[in-house]
Length: 106
Image (cartoon, rainbow, N blue to C red; front, side, top):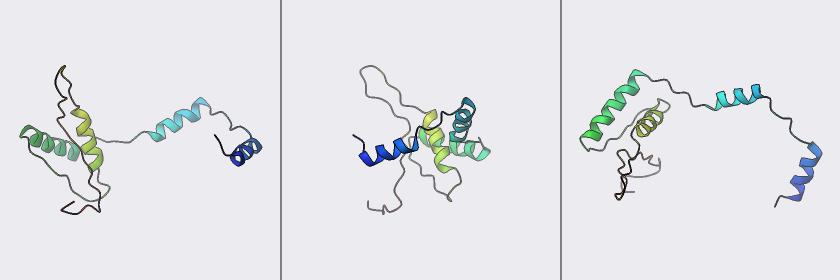
């Protein structure tokens, strides 16, 4: 149920204008995540693949705004879980983001 005040204000303001196809296309373009496949990302993916193949865990640490999250998420998407009938799913990559306030002992 909506708030009667909000309904009154909405009626006073009237309907929003319908977006044209051109405006909608521009909005979709601006909402896309930009990702440029850099050489450093390939190096990170190769390192993560080595860790995965040897069944070792790894931690990616670095300065803010350098693409760590995007690179790791892209690697996770390249290695999707596999489901075989009658067996639990095999998840080759688990991606965790630890909160900053999390200490060494949890």
